View 1 (spheres, helix red, strand yellow):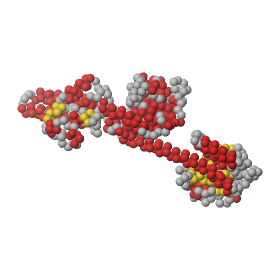
View 2: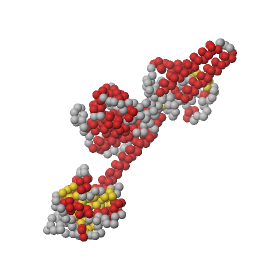
View 3: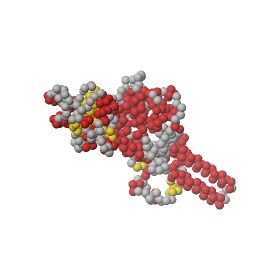
View 4: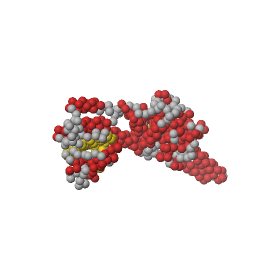
Length: 560
């Protein structure tokens, strides 16, 4: 029986109202396809989408007579995806192919009587369902720009008495009008997906640009999302312990993914020579070479002094040679200390600091002007250009005023005396600043409500659960679980990376020992760390992303 106009209108309005609240677009479209078929009592209906990659896919079908409804891939039993460019070269096309290729409505009183169409699909459908397809109506779904984005097909309409009839012009118009709503849903969905792809592509491009900024951190922004996803999955799957009730919605997963890609976006403002600083004296290059030349000067001076004394017969040759050898050994020992302190792989002792101070007081004669061949900016930072222009005695290790620019202190002795690592106090502050920049950048983006947690997740990856992290000194109670996941992911990637110039690649056992210590000292969340170990997240990641030479035998119980 055909629907009454009032019933059709009422159902149409109900569908229209539910579109905004229906999470599954295909369910809304299925209701529209059903309603359009009901207007003419069509026994069978098909809904196809036409994708950007030129595939025509059967997404929904119904058969009222047989009480059958199929969604998505369940329809592959009838029709797999059709690649339209291949269809164009076929001499005989199916009705749905011709409809999409030519943007053409096809209305046939008898499907099998047409010799110009390939009816293989209907023969297969009828055989599978013990059904007989007769009348056919195929209508393209065209968006506002005139592109075909889908199609619908209906079979076997009935008259008021329930007899098979052909599709009339009125039926065709009614179905087209109702299916315009399906076109609108399909178009809006595609537009939304396009914007999402654009956003995600932009995020990935930004992350890759940050990684590419440094030749040594080329995969950090790309690998942190992998670890974060692995650990979040393991946490959700926990059935016992403190995390047994932890769940993540689709929005939470999406927010975590976006946050993990963008967690270091603030590094666009951090000079790469600080991020990549492999030695304490490094700026754009390693200034140890300047200091080495000064030691060379002192050695040459010692040699000249020795030769002068020989010529003057001041003392026996053996005495002068012993004096010269002792001076050379002293210089070599002192330079070895300076070179070792420059590396930063082991903490300096008070004895090291004292020795550096003593070495710095040694002097050499500089003959050539330090005021020549420099930029106006460098010259403006010089305290005494007159003195710098003439020969004078200078310290072997220097802390000059012109080595302090803006917030950076490039003093040689100042940097060599950094007790741990290669980064001095001002450079550390600049590196830490990238978190604040990240937060400010993300706050400036108009994220939709479902992504409102991106800023918190991304901005907390340097916080500590004991409140000693930065930038906000949050405690564990003030941080969400995804934010704590981000912190662990960031640390694990950095520790396992084999491309950092300031540290040699660590064995997996060394990395886990460090992280265990971080767990015990309030740096990272202990519950998430335990999941990280027990669920084998570290192992799964290592097998895919860490060099085999770094992977050694691990007993998980040793690191809990």
